[in-house]
Image 1: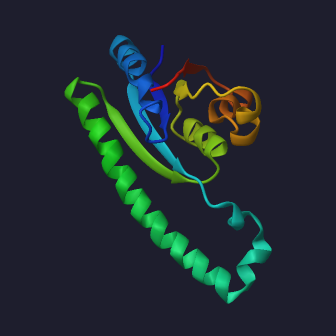
Image 2: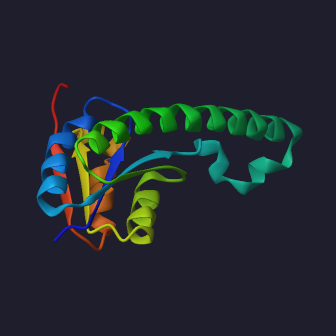
Length: 155
């Protein structure tokens, strides 16, 4: 039923609470599991007019160096998770992508033909959800395939 499961992560213990659910589904359906972490660009990159100054060029250069460092750290993190799942006989893949989290998750799901997206939600409500947003809710509103959302608390 589910050949490919996409698991977006943010590096937090809360996000990792989805693992037992994903493992169970992957074992049951002999699914491939793709672990994804998205690096979102800083807000100042949203406005193209900011690219015009030397200061902005310096900021962009600094961001690219920071991005490469983060990408390497995340790759090591995801490779560790991948190894744990592979030792259990689960086929896995890892991706580190750059862009807005919701749109990038949806894009990877489509590109990799994911049958299910499995994600842990931080369970924000009220004003905190308004201010911080909810990646899980954003994906749920835009995605064209099943999504498993596990709500976490105080992990």
